[in-house]
Structure formats: structure tokens, C-alpha cells
Image 1 (cartoon, helix red, strand yellow):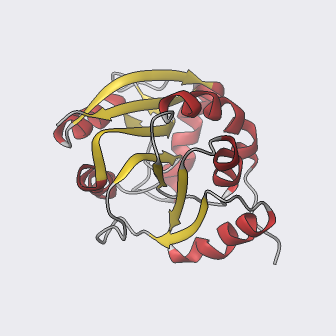
Image 2: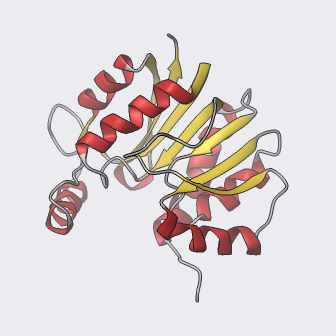
Length: 197
């Protein structure tokens, strides 16, 4: 079986790492929610050797993630745990949580469940970084994002590019404060939150 491959991961990993190196500089443990193919994990972990990078995803993606981890091993990179947003998370507290291209894929109730999990498992003063596309004041930031949203909804009616205002409201209810909203390549954003409550 060939290992899974995401061109988007290859395209965005360098730009994301430039932000994460600073944001996670004081973190010792990071949980990646929805590791997907595993490409981000094998690139980020060796470039942030001071932290432990925990991959996670639904069980159906574990084989692919493990293939990437086997080919690009790192001493601070951990094999995936099964994390289903419908169920309690199989971890204790962590200093940081990272997720990429997940909130527009899962249903809105699972976006809410994600923030509930973050509230429970992120340490005080911990960092949450979310990468992906977002709408502002109910409007798309580009024509390509509008087309992408149509494709998402045709694929799954529960998927959609989320409104930044709704995400910030959920985060605040989980005791998080938005510190930075970074513009990223390909009309994406990197949202950086800190746990203040």
C-alpha cells in the first residue's frame, strides 16, 4: 500500500512551521487533532525538537500516518492515538493543540465538540493553533474559497467554511482568547489562541 499524500500539506508546511516555531516555543507537549496523512507531523516534529508531538486521528487514517512516521522517524514524534470528536479524548493535559483543515470538514456539532475537548485538555496558558480557510462577516475571502465551499457541501452537506466570528465565540466560551489571526498562502489563515481561563 502506497502511503497517502496531500499536495496541500506539502505546499503549506513551510509557512505554517514559521509560525509554530514561535507559538510553541514554550510548549513541551503538543496534540495534533486530525493528523490526516501524517505529513505535517513528520515535518514539524524534527524542526521543534524541544517538544513531544502526539499525532491523532480516526482509526481509518492510522495506517497511513504510521507509514509516514516509519519512513521519517523522529525521537519526539509519537504514533497516533485514536481520537474521535464524538467521544472523550484519550489524552490528559497538553501544552498545545494544533489542527489543520479539519473544522470545515467535520459537522458543526463536531466543531463544538472540538472546542469542548480543547477546554478540557489544554493546560492553562496553553496554545491552540487552527489552520484553514474562514469567512469574515459571512463573506468569502476569495473566489477560490467560494468554489471550495460549494465543493465541500456537495461532498458532505455538514461540511462548510466556517465564519471566523462563530469560531471566536466558541473559543471564548472554552476559555480561549484569540491572540493572532495570521494571513497564510492560498487564502488560508492560522488562528492562534491562548487559554486564559
